[in-house]
Amino acid sequence: MTSIHALPAFADNYLWTLVHDGGAVVVDPGDAAVVQRFLDDEGLRLEAILVTHHHADHVGGLAELRARWHVPVYGPRAEAARIPQLSVLLDDGDTVEAGGSRYKVLAVPGHTLGHIAYHDAEARRLFCGDTLFSAGCGRLFEGTPAQMQQSLQRLAALPDATAVHCTHEYTLANLAFAMAVEPHNPALQTRLAEARAQRAAGRPTLPSTIGDEKRYNPFLRAAVPAVRSAAELHAGEALANDGAVFAALRRWKDGFRS
Image 1: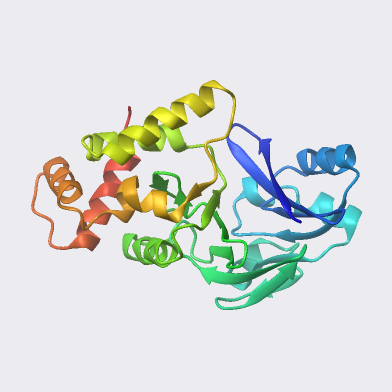
Image 2: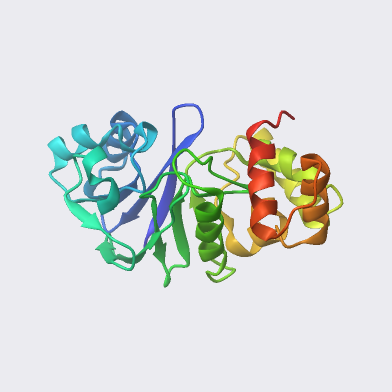
């Protein structure tokens, strides 16, 4: 049986670590010390590393971990020049078998151009890095709004029960923005109360699920009339299509202060 652990790192990262038969697979290990401490405390061996994209808080621990453990490091071929520790280069549609799990690789550009996600259909589990957040999505550091919307739509098409393991504890801030967009959404109101209680108790708000995200994440709801109206009101103009709504939402969130 596989267990999954959210290892806190930096101000708000989670280093997702899967444990199976005494071995561990870690996703986006930005801090080697956090991972190594967990391995030591639990008496585990590191078996593999999965990487979603090149940002430092996701890859900063690679060199140290790989030097100690000599394990395969899987990651996006499109970002190999920026992640020299990768040993297995992945493209869209590839599969990865690690730690007793089998993942399909999904190209999800937007936050970065080579960003990938890992989907375990059997376990109904998604590791999506900084593409999809609970009630939000990643900033567009390299890609376009159209790319990010397409990536999010691809993730939204996964089964509703799929657990969303994103990399940052941004949920309360994202929910504040979602409330500004769609304040009368009862699912959103319920989720905000739940998330506040979780954080007050010192618990993560993650993972979410694809089904839940479709009920309250504004970046998955550009076609909803209330969301479109809010985006148009903030933009001060009519928006031609769902893509324009999404782009307006992303610009609004970039400057949003709750």
